[in-house]
Length: 304
Image (cartoon, rainbow, N blue to C red; front, side):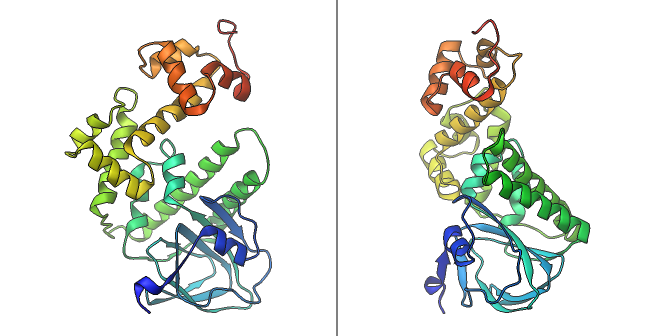
């Protein structure tokens, strides 16, 4: 079968085939409760997302990029959008847990939670599995359960809890990955390397520098070429990514009852409060004051 003829499945398609309810197009947690009578995907396929697969009980035999793997109890493996996955066999008592997420989710939610370098293992052409202690598996499954629960319920700080739980899983996995494979070299593509460098620069400079030209100059690219690269890897242009991180930081600051809107505008280095207000409303649909009233209820006497 040629690479071009291999079927690609979305998170939605895989979720529905497993009889589960999709939580999000960008992030989904699956925790099996019963053993499997059959698994619908018996042919080679790719997905449009990253995945972390944990075998909690039993075993599963698969071909990953034509390499045979037997993933046993308390073992974990990461799958990427480039991975060709082909199920061969599974035990009758198989129980699994999985986390599926897109590049889009990473770039929308993890600027402040995870160092960009922590994701470098996701682009390695080598896909090693990890053997974990039962307590490690229980911890990851518990965090997956928190993500699933929060997705299905309305609650305060829902998105923050989901993103933080996701971050903890990633950090925990990376720490175990580096312990097990300290000498494994991860080579990114040029576009991925530029994207990681841009995000690192953005985290360090977004308060002072919000022009695409600034970042393009440092990376020795034209603004148009930089945006093209970022769009291909992350699904967002340079200006979109810059605006998103500024808005995210603004929301964090607006949740602080001790800070006035003028102080927040100054912290984010806008020329004045009015310019900050226009920027915030353009990208959120709410003024900073309305955001405080609607989402935090923490409006100081000076601003009320």
